[in-house]
Image (cartoon, rainbow, N blue to C red; front, side):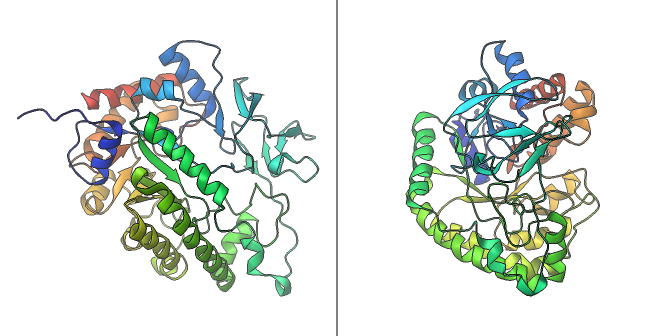
Length: 426
């Protein structure tokens, strides 16, 4: 049989999305806020691959302290996908300036957005401020022994008689012309200057994503912003949450109508939802609850995207969601991430056998709860090789770890993961 001609990274990703044969395994590290690597791990990996230098890794997602996979490192690792993200990060900061930052737990020197302002609290933990404004209460805290920030609960007392769903909609607005131009410029640059596949994070379309509920980018918050109170509200104040989703959906559909024609087919994948529905042992909502509260709005968004573009819709959802997958597919999602195979009912062979014709699996390449951080390099290599064998059978697979690689993962284990990837490429 004649060997397949070598594809560019963009062609390779498109072939995966179309379920056509590919010349080799398609690989992503760092295109999304759920497919990345902690900045300290990026720093050590960069030194291992490219040698020591004066280069300081940029923290491109400060909330999770994810490090930039810069073009030099991306090319060295032969990664196939690049990401385009919102102009402002989770703290409401624009990434248009950089300053030094020392990660307290291990002393790694990195760069953070210039507007990221922080102080120390009475315990010696770092606290950070929304939009860099130190005159308002802090929105997140980095404990001395942590590699990333935890949202601070800024929930005030709840008066049931005064609850207004629109208070939870303050952050939703139709995308501005300036932001459309920002996305257009970013996409155009990657399209014209690289051969990589392009992954777009579309803001404002994730219904009930618990990472977004505290609104760490807002100086002052109203409505229901406490994580526990929000989860309670999805059951006890369902009408309230439904009205929030209605408004969010209305605004989101208008934003899609503005951005889609501006970017056209230069984008291949669009991230719209990071809402988690699974725990380690099973989904934490019933299929009927998903159908009643989430599915109508997710379907409306996905149908709009599919109607206006050729983009494939990417869903990030942790945990055991096997029982929800038929409805998730009906809602119009094309890609599932992170594929948490350590959770109940999420065995790789079962997922591939039952849903491989309907879903692209993006992730699941190695267990980031146990094997990657705590296993031996040999155990990492073997698990990665086996996952690739299963998920890449008959295509429809983009290799990535199961969620972000944390900063404290041993470099030798990351290198073992990459060795298994490169051996599979051969």
